[in-house]
Every structure is written in structure tokens, then in C-alpha cells.
Image 1 (spheres, helix red, strand yellow):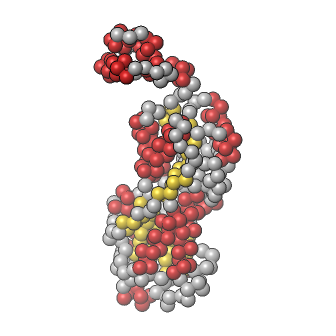
Image 2: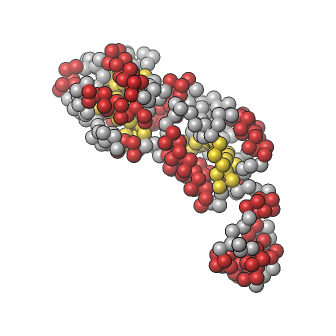
Image 3: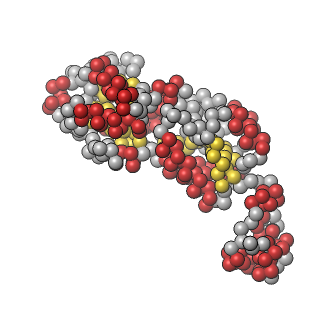
Length: 355
């Protein structure tokens, strides 16, 4: 194993000089720094993480709090987590994954133990009970998600309200007037999870503005759950000609059920989703979709928190603009669909009804 003394001997400097180059605690001439860095690279020296942490009062670890719940689509959460981990490494940080549902206790435990230098929180609720503890500690932190009150917080997220509005605009432009939304599992709304609530706000507001009838139903992602939700939707609104899905696990069951009912996509009914591109592109009918930029959110969160650790950035809220990709699952309202659809409602009449 290469030691600090080996680097010092190779570079022709003292061990303390190598330490100062690594820690940045003293000014070292450019030529000496270059010589030491060249020796480090040549010998393949890796500073001992524990010793470095003791010397700098830093662990060089970022805690990532990802409550893994059964009602959430875990692949998306893991895609964000991987982006966080890989980006953190490029900045010299490792990631401590915290997957439990301890809430405020976990924030205080990790901050108090000095296990990490900063924290990134996911699965953010509008009234998230972790935030008072986070504000109280003043610990460097970034949220991937948006609470109701962002005062004193740094957040990054997709602009889910704009994403919902964009979906409605697309379907309205194709002539659809009766739209059903297949949402996340009921527990997601019961917790008032930020992304789901904000999407629903965008969907409802734009539907109301355009005079569309919109029906929203939460849905478990299982085949049986989607089947029950689809039957309920057609019982309540038989004139529905388009679906918006915000539940990645529900996309394939929905397409299969529509096929069984001999409802052709997109000729008889249009379907679009708010989901990662790979989910939309590999569906049995490639789905028109608004992408969830998981990797971009993970990368940006790390860049925010590293900048905070270096004192280069204050609190900010970054909402990534939604991007729509049109694929094979949406089309203009056809003659067959028009015969089965209800007459367009009077703007503002039914759109304001609770869904």
C-alpha cells in the first residue's frame, strides 16, 4: 500500500507538505503542488478516509434519505439514487443511503452523529415532518421534491404542475373533451406527496380553463387494481376518449385491458403518461409522455449540496421544465370516438366538479 511518506519521498518534499496539498490548509506554490499531485497520480495514492475526516472535520459523505414504500415506483427512486451516487463520486463524496421511514428522528440522528456532511431528501410531502428538524439544525441539505413552504430550503424537481397542464393541452389539441386520469396509489395522495398533488393541480386547473371534463381516480399499480379503476371510470364517464397515467406500474396493465376490451390505441382511445422515457418507449404501444428526468434531478441535487458545502450557493428552488414526446399512443379524436363521446360541456360547468 502506498503511504503519504512514499508520496513525499517521490516528490522530494516533506510529509507535511503533502498533507497541506491534500487538505488545502496552507498555501503551496504551484510548482510544488503540481509535483506532489504528479506523485500522487503516479503512485496511485489514496488518502485514508478516516484520517482525512478527522483532519478536516468532514466525512466526505452525503446522506440520501429515500423512504422505500410499496406504493411508490421503486425503479424511478433508484434511478435518482444512482445519479446522486455517481455524481457525488465525481465531487469526491460517497453516499450513505437511508431507506427507513424514521422521518425527523433520522435527520437528527445522522446530523448529530456526524456520519455525513450534508443530506439530500426524496419523497417530499407538502407538509413534510422532516423539514422542521432540517431547518432547526441548519444542516446543508437539498430536497428532490417540493413542499408547500420552501422558505429557507433548496429544492429541485420537475415542474409537475406544468407537466399536468402540458398533458391536457396535448389532448385538447387533438380534440379530446373527456379525459380520465389514472393516478398513483391512494396512499400517495393520503400522504399529500408533493409531485402527485402538484400534477393534479396542473391537470385540474388547465382542464377547467379549457372547458374539458376531467375525472381523476387513484389506482393501485397491480393488474387487478387497474382493472377495477378502469371499470369504475367507464361506469362513471362512458364518454372518456383519452387517459393520462401518472403511475408507471399501471401503464402495461391499462394497455392490456384496453386491448382485451377491443378499444384500439390510439384509434378508439388515446393514452399518455407522465413517466420516465424508458417506461414510455418500451410499452406495448409506445406512449406519448412527459418525461420524469430522474438522472437530471439527481445530478442537480448533488451539485446544489456540494456548492452549499463550499459556501458558493444559497437556498434556491429549481423547477425543471417538462418536455413532451409524442409517440404512437395519442391521435386526433376519430369518428368512432365522437359517436360514443358526450357532447362537449359548457366551459366551467362540469370541469369544476370534484374528481
